[in-house]
Image 1 (tube, rainbow, N blue to C red):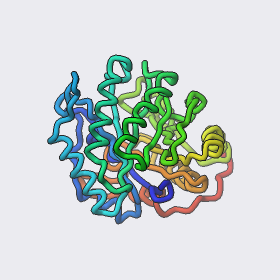
Image 2: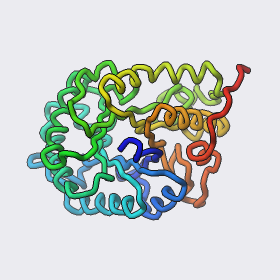
Image 3: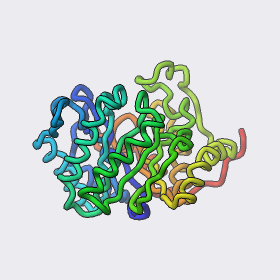
Image 4: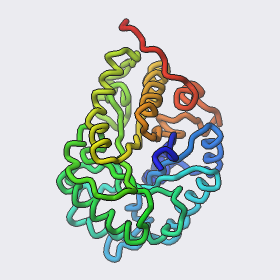
Length: 316
């Protein structure tokens, strides 16, 4: 399944967004994505929104929203794309894990039941980037409980398991128990060096000071990436669990040459390791497609889908 997922892209700033900043969804984007050579899409979803589900027992997810998600899943499958749906930006769960656990499990019970008869090209991801009060220790229990709920109706569906502390490589040591389940893939997010990938990002305090940070694709820069993934590779081998890179990308305020070098190296290196991956994202601040002009950022598209691994650059 991890090989089938291959190269993917996130439909970001869409179904995980609040109404004030939600981008419209265009099902024809899946045709474009497939034509570019991608083989899966990851669709982040905020089920917690007030207009989508009940905040008190029985925590019912609105049927109309289920139909919306179904139409997205169907559109992906119709374009021969695998599709990952997750739980994203569940802020109440992060702030009050104990108080929100029943809702978290109830929602997974409903999602699992709704999609139980779908083909295995539909993949579930338990939760995006656990953090705040949903500590690493709690996460070890929460993901196992959620997996048990999913397995009641989807015994063989592939499920992506993320890690605590915002989902990065540094938190792998806290993933103390990997369930004995042959249909799990470990998913990791990667945005390092953060001062490069998030320079000028409006939602990151102080990021304007990082403007102008470059990534030159030197041996030292490559080695920093390689070093950060050694624990993940060791865990993958010891637990026989494949790896999916659920998010990686550099924000549009970085210079395009550096973005291309970073994206190209990571894409090819991930593939050399046997990782599947999903670039963040399709058509917003990190995107490879401009929905207003209906044009591609061709250099980034090539970096993801066509460019070969370049010879390492010498230190300037």
